[in-house]
Every structure is written in structure tokens, then in C-alpha cells.
Length: 526
Image 1 (tube, rainbow, N blue to C red):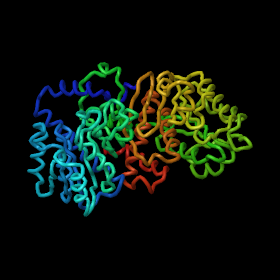
Image 2 (image 1 turned 90 degrees about the horizontal axis):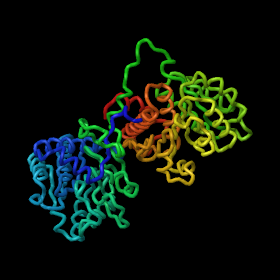
Image 3 (image 1 turned 45 degrees about the horizontal axis):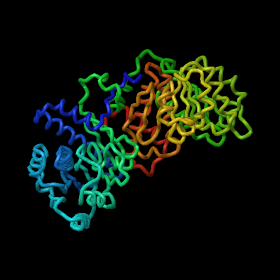
Image 4 (image 1 turned 60 degrees about the vertical axis):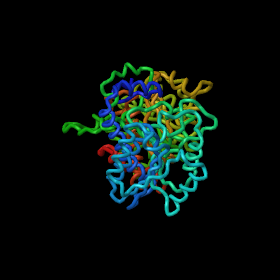
């Protein structure tokens, strides 16, 4: 059901090794070309993501941890790109093994970095030759006059095995515990994580993990989430000429190139009806903000007509605050929720609607939930349920579940799944489920599509209400399947949050500011 969007498979470590072996066919020059693109993409991405922490200083300082394998080569190429991009930058290279013990392409990357920027490099003694105490002393000397703005982990990659030999574990633990490093990134996988759960795992703790070319399955496993940080997928074209049917059993990752599918000029001869009519059941006296955020998200996402049904006490102020929407006042309960007697009024708009959103801000009252249930069962077109509309008594009663999108976070999914495991529930649901979280997942017809976009600034009240409005708008506009609308809406929402964070950071911002960056995210490649 998600065939319309560009996506790639997520492979196990053995599958990834086999695929790379077949892909490169021992062609060293081709492998070097791809490795160069990977390392440069890591550097470019890190320079963007560093801005979520702070403005990049005039003389940034970089530390690179280098292993003997190709992850080490990627990290060294990234360092060269970083130094080329910022001529005032300085780098410290800390190897696990000597250059002579590294693989040939890693040695080549080392030599090219030295040739390019030897005067801006400091190469530290090989870490494997040092005791834990010597490692601590050396690191303390390096950070005495100031820390590092970026640290790149290029140690292990797919070479990682459960448990790490002395003193590698102590070295990584020391790096993890330091407060002298602003941003930590890993290439492909944080050093130390594997496909199997280890109770005493000591892995590199990344702020960002850049999956280059192939996403390896360890980075999406729940027990590895404390280590991977925020995931980014750097598409290098590994799967452009392959058949997705060969990876039918694999979970997928959405390519970053999906968002430009929304970037189109509107036809000259068009009117508002060509871009859909969305009806929304929103709000309560105490939760009016959620209703307003959802409405503004839908409007910014380009829906042609928006009809918002809200408690009558909210109506006057909402009309004044957001005149682009049509605000319909509904009878309300004594507690300020949507009353069931408003059903007849809502039904007047359903025949003209292309999609329905229900839930943001409606609150916990059962009468409001009954209204949502009745409205949904009088509507045969796509429905999105969010927030307090995510109730088993509503979902289980729906006649057309295959036309329904659910957008739960972890707590809401626990509420609706009953006795089933969350994955079993999602796989069995006839419609679409968007599992919200640091890395959203769109689950439909038993398939799972992962989205590696967004920023931690989204951990704020109201971000889900914006998302519901965005997805509802795309549903109403039509032309795409429900899974595709859901994935594109979540990707757009996440990319806008990235743009906001890079401009203003993760802290001193508000949820509604994301709206101001939806346009930037759509109009720019970044």
C-alpha cells in the first residue's frame, strides 16, 4: 500500500554484508567513490545537525575516533570534508589501531587527509596501546583548554561484537561520560551495538547516527535506542536498480527524496474545491489550544476548505483568531466538551467533506467520544483519529476501519491495543497506524515504513495536533493512498522541526513555530 513513495529496505547485518559484497564486486575504485560520497554526506549532515546545539563557532574543534575498517575510512573522509568546508577548523585523530593495521582504503583515507590538512591535524597515540589511566590522562590534556564541538565515531560499524575488549570499553565509557563534547555522531551504527540484547552493553552514545547507503537493523531495535540518538538516512543510491519484491519481508525506510513529491505548482485553472474539504471535530473548553493547532496545521498544509466543529464557547474567539477556517459552534456538555446533540449539525457537512479528523482537544468525556463514534459511522471517506479519540470503544465500533488512520504515541497505543502486543495490534489493524515517537513508523497491511526525520524539539505539547492537521489536509486533497498521506505528512512535520531547530535550537522555541517552517522544509533541499 506504500508503493508510491521512494523507500529502501532495512537489512540485517548478514544481509547488508552480502548485499555490499555483491554491489561492489571487489571493485576498489568504485568502493572508494561510494565511500567518499558517504563520508562527505556525513560531514555535511553533521554540520547541519550541530546547529541544533548552537551556532557553529568560528574555530570549531573536531575529534575523530578511527577503527581499522571502512567506518574508519568514512570518518576520515568526513573529517577532510569538515576541514575543507570550514578553513578555520582543527581536527584531532584518535586511532584504535595504527595506520599500518588498517584496511587499504582506510589507509588511503588517512593519507589523503594528512596531505590535505596536515597543519590543522593532531594525531594522538594509538588507543589500543594505552592503559585506561593513560587514555584518561591523554583525553584530559586534550580537553583542558576547551572541548570538542563535534566527535565522529568511526570505530566498529558492522565489525562490532557483543562485549568489548579492554581497554576499548573504558575508552568509550570515558567519551560517553565527558561533558567536553558538544555533539557526538556515529557512522552506520554506534560502536558496540549489535543485533542481540546485552544486559551490560557499553556502546558509544550518539546524538545522531548517520545510516550511509544501507540502514542496518540494529539501529531500529528497541534495546539499542539509548545509544543511537536521532537517526538520519543518507541515501547513496544502493537500491536504485533493484526490485523491492526481493525485499518483501524487510521493514523499509522512507528516502529523504520523498518530500519533494509535494513540491508542485498549482494549476492556473483551479479553485479551493480542487484541494479538498476537511471536516474536523476538535476541542473542549479546557483544551482549545489543541483544536487551534490542528486547524492551523491543516491550513498550512494547503487544504482547500476547512470546517472545524468546536464547542460553542470557543467559537467567537476562534473565528477572530483564525478566519481562514469555517468554525461551526456545537452544543457542549456542562464540563465544556462536545455534546452528542451536535450530531445533526455535524452531519450537514459530511456529504461535502473529503476527509475527517477527530480527537485533538476533545478531552476525556464519554459523551464527546460517543459523538465522534456516531459521526465516523455516518462517514464513508477517510478518517483520522488522534488524542482522546483513540479509544477502543470508538475504534472497535467503526464500520470502515480500512479507511481509518490512527496516530497514537506509545501511551495511546497501550490504551487501544488491549491484550495484544503493540506490534500484533498494528499489524492486524485494517487501516493505517502511525506510531509516533522519536522515529515514527507507518504500519499498513502488515508492512512497516520507518521515518528518520525530526528533532527532539517535537517533545512538546501540541506537536501531535499539528501533525493531525497536516495529515488530514493531505488526506482531503486526495490523489494518494492513506499510508502515503500519513508518511508524507509525518516527514513534512519532521523536516519542518529540523529546520526550526537548526535556526533557533531545541530549547527556546514553541510548538506553533513549526508552522512557520513548513514552507521552508518544502521549498528547500537540506
